[in-house]
Image (cartoon, rainbow, N blue to C red):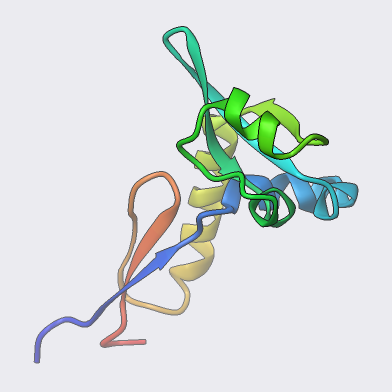
Length: 113
């Protein structure tokens, strides 16, 4: 029998981490950005920002034009990586194989789960 792999994607992982520590962000639009050359690019948004049309990949200036009350913060890859490692250790109890897939996801073997 072949392996059965489940792919888990957590597109709001980094904003969820912020919302857990600072619950007031659950109701306010928040976007995380990264500097790419001379531009600032949105890399993550919370649900409130997504509801106003802000999406990862757009220029931060365009995002601010869509959502007047948009708060922004720089992305923090080390914090996201630390959270992914903690989730990987937790998931390892339930399945024989867990692998981090990119900056915001996992691959889980389901055959032995």
